[in-house]
Image (tube, rainbow, N blue to C red; front, side, top):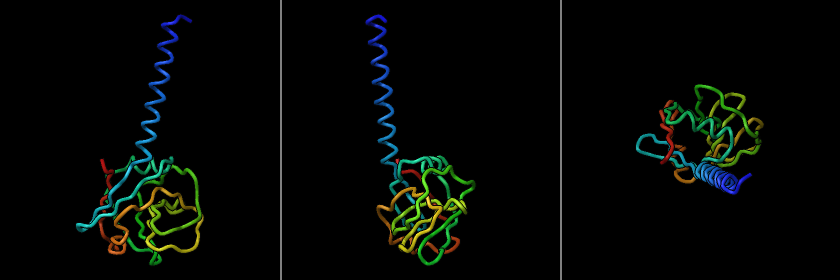
Length: 144
């Protein structure tokens, strides 16, 4: 292998590694906004397969409803790719419930449930979740 070939190979590897790291960093910092009736909720999205699949469907408007007086749920058009299932439900969790194929956004914490995939965490506007009424249309979009 000549010096020039080696130099080009090393530069290509460095460029690809840097590009990959930038994509990972950007993915780790992705945020979405839920908007309804002049209110909003900001959610930091985690870097996992299920989250990436969810983000690929945005922007999207979904009809939400209250469930068990602890979470707001909405059904997606299709089921998401499953990454890692969790069972802990905590306030501020933005999750996907794999068995039913719905988003589950917890505004009150309680118990555990298998089948949850954590997509992100509410950063601000959690107090607005309780204001979503059954049948309200909520727009979800990536914040640029």
